[in-house]
Image (cartoon, each protein chain N blue to C red):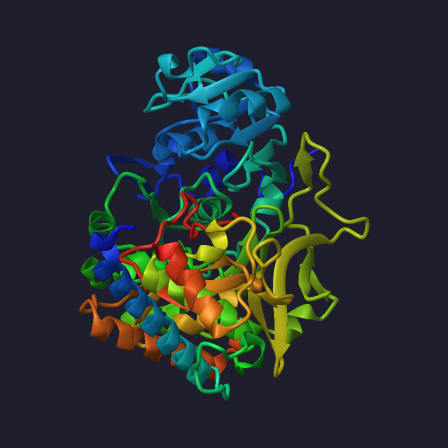
Length: 94
Length: 462
C-alpha cells in the first residue's frame, strides 16, 4: 500500500520486538523469575512472568517506547501469546 | 476570670520583652518586641473591632505577626489566612467566621467584586494604644493546607497552641528562631510563639526570596534554632549557602522525617540537636523526637500522659489539651466521642519503635496490595546518589496501578547508558529492602520536585 514507508516500519518492528524481549528478560532477572525461552507462540500465562512482572513490563515499555497501547485501545483483545503481545505494540506504533 | 496561661501575647511580651533588644525580622526590616509589648492597634477604626470576629489576610508576614499580637485578647475570633489563600475562598471563609472585617495590607482593588465585610488596613508601623482595654479570650482559627476546595477552618485557643512550649531555661543564650514555614501555618506559628514566649528573637521567611539569599539572611542574623519540613531542608541542603548557618537546634515537621534527611542534617550541622516533631493543624504538637532517629519510641504510646496516643488499625490517634477543639462551619467532626483525633497517619512497629509509613488517602493499590508512597521514598532516599524522591501511582492494565518514582540526584548524571546503569543500581537497592510490588517499576530522573506553599511535596492525591 505504502511501499515507501516499509523500511522504517520494519525498523520500528525490529526495535519494538527487541525492546520487549530485552525488558522481558531483564524484569524476570530482577524479580528472580524463571522464564521460558522467548518465542512468538509462547503463551503469556506460561511464560513465567507473573502479573507484577507484566505490570512492570507495560510501565517500562511506556517509558522506552513512549506509548502504552493498553491505555489507547478502548475495546482490546488481551494478547494471549508473546507474538500477540509484540504485534499489539507494533500495531500501536504503526 | 483571668485568661488561661499564657494570657494574651501582649501580656507575654510585656512580661518578657520590655527593655530587651529582642527583634522580629522580616525580609525588609524588623520590629523590636519591646515596642509590641507596649501595645499596638491597627488604626482608630480597629478599636471598633474589639470583641468582634476578624479575618487576617495580609500579604506581608511581618505585618501579620504584628497584627496577631495587636488583635489577640482584643477580638473574639481571629482567622489567620496563609498568603497563598485564593481570594475566591476568602468570601466563604469570612462568611463562615461571621467576620466583621478583613484586616489586610493589600490594595482594596485586589478584592473588587468579592462579597466581603469591610477592609481594615494593616499598615506598618502599627499605632501605639492610648489605653489598653481589658483582654478577652480570642479564638484562633487556622486553615488547613489541602490543595483543593475551601480549606477547613480549625479552631484553637492560644493555650492549646502554646501547650507544647517549654519554659525558657536560665543561663542558656537567647535563641534566634527561624522557620522555612510561613507563620500563618501551624508549623510556622509554633516557631513564632516559641520566639514570643521564650526570650528569643526571630527571622521570618519570605516566599519570594530565593533559598541562597534566605540562608544568607539567616546567617546575618545569627540564627540558632530553625525549623522546616524535610522538603524545605532538602532544598536548603542543595544550596551551598547552607554551610553559612550554624544552628544549635534543627527541627523537622510536617512530613515524615526519614533517616536519610536526619543523617544529612547531622553531617551538615554536627553541633546541632536534630529533632523531628509530630504535629498537625488539627492534632497540635503531639511529640518531639530528639534522639536522631526516625520514628518514635513505643513508650510514647503509654497511656497516662497528655498528650495520649493510641494506634487503631495501624493509624495513630491523639487526645490532648493541645489539639484543636473543633472545625468552624461544615459538618465534619474533628474529634471522636472519646476525645481522640484520627491523624490519618499510618505507623508500623518494629523492635520497640514506631515508624511512619504514610497517610490515608495516599495509598497505592498494586493488584490488591497496598503501598504507601512514603515508605518507598524512605528507601530511595537512603541510596547514596539520591537527594530526594517522589513516589506516585501510574495506572496499569494488569494491576490497576503500579509504583513509579521521580528522583532528584545529588549531582547530575550523564544521559544514556550511565543513567540506565544508575537506575538499575537504585532499583536493585530498593529490591534489597522492599517486597517486589513496592519497588518502582520505573524511575525518572528530574532536576527538582514541586513543593506546596506549606513546604510539602506535591502529591497526586493531596
